Every structure is written in C-alpha cells, then in structure tokens.
Image 1 (cartoon, rainbow, N blue to C red):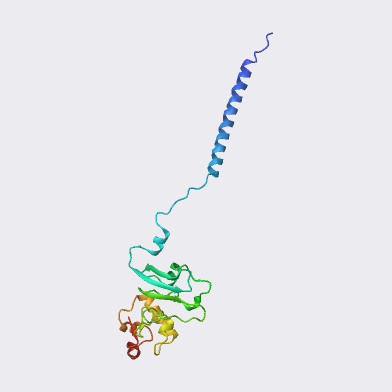
Image 2 (image 1 turned 135 degrees about the vertical axis):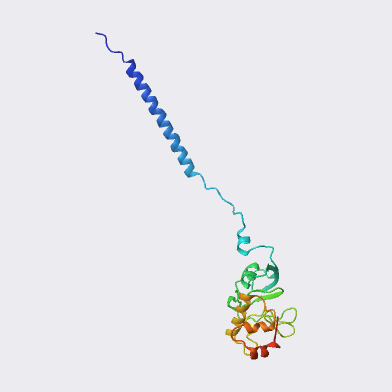
Length: 204
C-alpha cells in the first residue's frame, strides 16, 4: 500500500503560519502607533486675544497720567487707563518696595489725571507736591480736590470724619468724578448745611 502524500498537510501548515505571522506583525504595528500617539506632546494653542487686553478692555480708551513716587520699586510717570485704581498705578511702578507702609495707601481708590501718588514708609507724611499742595489731594490754593483726595486729606475737612471720608471715596469710585461741589449731596450723611460748610474748602 502506498503511504499518503504529506505535501498538502505541510502546505496547510505553511499557509497557517504565514497568516499568524501577518496578524502578529499587524498587531505590533498598531501597538507601536498607539504608543507613539500617547507619547507625543500636546500641541500648544496660543490665545487669539491677549489676556491683558481682554482683562482691561479696549486699549484705545481714554488714559490718565499719574506720577507715582515714594516707596515703590520704580518711581515715575505712568500712563494708565481712565478707570485705573491706585493698585494699578502701584503695579505699574513695579509694586511696593520692601520699606513701604502698605496700610497708608487706599489701593481701591480711582486715580485721576495729573495725580501725584505718594506711597509712604511707616510714619512718613506725604511731601509737598511741585504745585505747593500735598499728594493727598490738597492743591496750592489750600482746597481739597474731591476727585483726588485720599481719606486723610478728606478727614481734615470740617465735620468730616474717617467714616464719611470713606463714603465720599466710595461714591467717587462707584459714580466717577465729582463734576461739581453740589455732587456731595449725593453722599450719605451730607446735607445742605454741611455742604455750605464744605463749599469754600473743596474743589473739583
């Protein structure tokens, strides 16, 4: 009897082995691709709008110039946006110096154009400004400017204590500049009689 020919069996084994090898190679290729995709760094997306512009609004808005001096890192004249506050002016000047008396400055107050902002050291009084007035808000004529005076300057007015001074500043910050002395009537605690007492002591 003639023995069966083993060739077809070997051929089937060869085809099966080839299929296994192809599948294994495909699996390895897929695995390598997945590993590479996981290892690739995430792309960096640049914001379309500058955070500074977005936070502070249109850079074309009106500006004010403030002279910052005293206990700051870089004293000088700075151009700020019209609605800037003292904290913005101090930041523009590089921040407080190590010797600054931070409690002596109202950071929430709105600055005014042409203002001279003085940051004191502990126990230091505001110096006289170039026009003969103090940087706290009193001009050469001795009148307190309602739009630039700090709490200390307002407190020097008759019948104006620390609490009322803060209310005057708060009104200014909420409503903008005083356009006339009569605007003081809108501040809680100030009536006609008090306005008359203040009229010759203040200006806008």
